Image 1 (cartoon, rainbow, N blue to C red):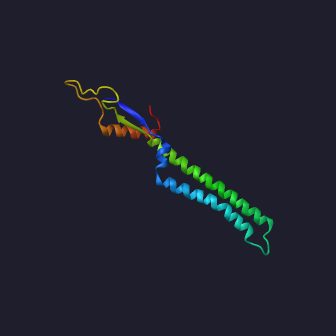
Image 2 (cartoon, rainbow, N blue to C red):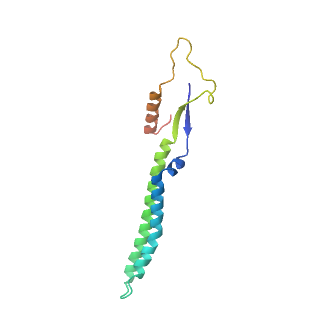
Image 3 (cartoon, rainbow, N blue to C red):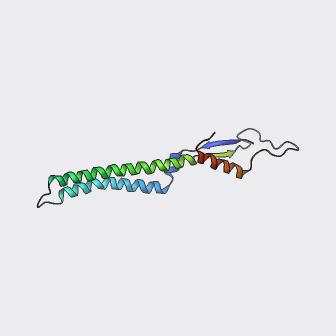
Length: 133
């Protein structure tokens, strides 16, 4: 009996997690609200008008906030992608339909295929080490 390495798309796995969508919606909502907050900080004070350094500080706050939000989103998504990439490979026994005829053990010989627990242990070792061969 042989084994087959199957692959599935990591992005599909990431996209099906509700936490990913929660973070995406939150970050995009904040990315949309930051310009309004900066505009409000620049225009809320009318008498006396704020110094120009306050407006520069408000604009800097907005720019840095946008950069940090994008950086946090990129870090979050790359971490999720790496986790999904490690889980994207599965090792499955070949059935009779995929790898040709399935042969049982020869008369008087013990089966040479490892047990399912051995396969799962080997799969865990491969994923931890990061190497397939």
